[in-house]
Length: 517
Image (cartoon, rainbow, N blue to C red; front, side):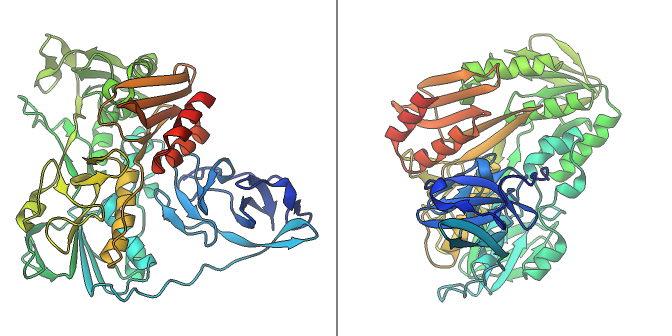
C-alpha cells in the first residue's frame, strides 16, 4: 500500500559494516542481495530485516528498537527482530529476515531465512472458539490464535457481507478516491480457508446461552463453543432529526457505507457534514478532494478541542478552510430536507449529500443477553474476560482497566482494537495475558497526519513545542499533573519515544522528552 523503499546504503553482502560503528539500539539502512534492508543492533545481537513496514510501507530504518522489537515510525506496528513476526498491529504480515555473519569485526548479511515453524498448541487450549464480530479486534484475535498454534475449531461470525477490511481507509484515501478497492480487504477468502477459520459472513447472532455454551444465528443455526469472544464493535449515532432517514443522509462505519457515499458523491455538488469529529473532518477532506463544496456543522467553538486542545483545533479548522471547507460552529442541525440542512441558528445549507459524524455507541446487546455486566461498554478484566466465565469482549464494545491511568476506558480506535484482539488470543488459550498496551491512533487531513498516543479522559493542561501551522508539532497532555498523552505532527521519533515511556509509566522519561522537543 505504501511506496517501495529505495535500495541504498552500504552493501552488507559484499563489504559488511564495522560492528563497533553501530551503537546499541541503532538502525542502519543498507542493502544486500539487491534488496533494501535494515541492520539492527540490540545489545550484542545484530539482525537484518526487510526495510519496509508491511502495513503501509514505512521506512523501518526510521523506527525504534524496544525490548527486542522493531517499531514502525508511522503507525507503531511492532515486529519481532528474531523471527520477523508482526507482534503488534496494525501490521499483520511479517518482515523478511536474513542471517547476520560476524567476521573480522564486521557484520555481513547472509542468506534469507525461512519463516520459523508455528509453535505447538498450548495444552490449555479450548476445543472450540467462536468470535462474534469481523472487525479489527475479531480478525486479529483469529489470526493470532492460529499463529500461536491453536488447532481447535475457530469460527468468526460477522454481520458484514465482506471479509475483514481496512476500516481507517474508508474515511481517508478510499473515500477520497486515492486508494483502489483491492487495497481494502485485509485478507482474501482463501487466507481464512487456509488457516481453517470458518467465516459466517452476512450473519447475525440473535442469542447466547452461556450455560449451554451456544450461540444462535438469525438463520436458526446453533453453534457450540468452549470460549466465546464478543468483538461486536460500535454503531454510528444517527441524530433523531426531521429528515434524518432521507436516502441522501449517511453515516460511515462499513465498507458498504463508504461505497454508497462514493456513489452519491459522484452525482452531488454540495455536502454537509454534521459533526467535527475525526470521522467528520476526514470525510470533509475526502469530499473536498473529490471536488464537492463542503460545510461542517458542529456545536463546539473549535474542532476537536476537547481531545487535541486549542492550537491543534485552530490549525485543523484553518487547514480545512484553506482547502475550501466552510464551518458553522456553535450551531447544530434542526432539520434535513431533500436539498438542504437547516440549522438552529437559521442557516440553510444546500446539500445533495449529508454525512453524520457525531460519534458511536458500543454494541452491548449480545453481552447483555449473555448476562455480562455492562456500563458504557462491556465490562472486562485486564485479560478481557467478562463477568461471565468463558465469555470475553474486545474492541470498541469493551471497557477495560487501564493500567497506566488507573481507570476503566473504552477506546474507539482501530489499532487499539487490533491489539486488544491480539492480546485476548493469548488469554483465550488459557494463559491470561494482562493487556498493557497504550492506545494509539492517527488521523489524516489532506497531506497532514496527526499521531496520538496515550489516553487522557480529560485535559488539565497542555504543553506544546513547535508549531502546528508549520506542520512541526508536539503536544503533551497532562491529567493531575502527569503526562498521559502526546500528539505530534511529523515528529515520528518523538511519538515512538512517548509510546515507550507511557507503556512503562515513566514520567521522568516523558518530562525529558518534552524538554528535548
